[in-house]
Length: 119
Image 1 (cartoon, rainbow, N blue to C red):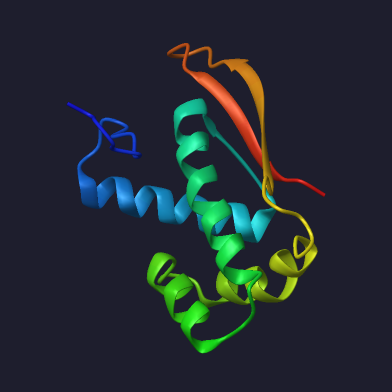
Image 2: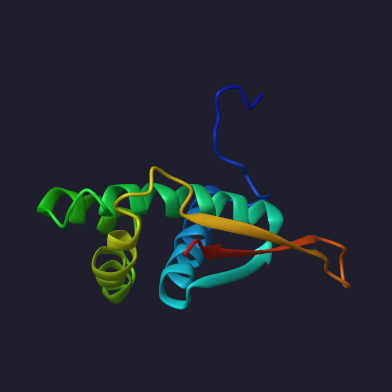
């Protein structure tokens, strides 16, 4: 049963899923957009929005430590998150990302989506 479980399993083991989502959030932060399946885009959106909400409160030690725990791989992603992305959304109450549906992938007919930052 999935009662009160806010995370989709994505047919992956927990460590693999965690690593996949972390890497996709890092890619979104560094490149500004991400093209993936619709289900993965929705999960990445949850994590990315939480990180921006955390980062826009300020570049304090505790906020930085919490963000580093979620994105331990790339220091430049953290720097870009705190210095470039979060200051753009200080006055915005939420909804920092947008999902565009791109249709179905030819090989396996998976729903494709593009996730990007709202300007």
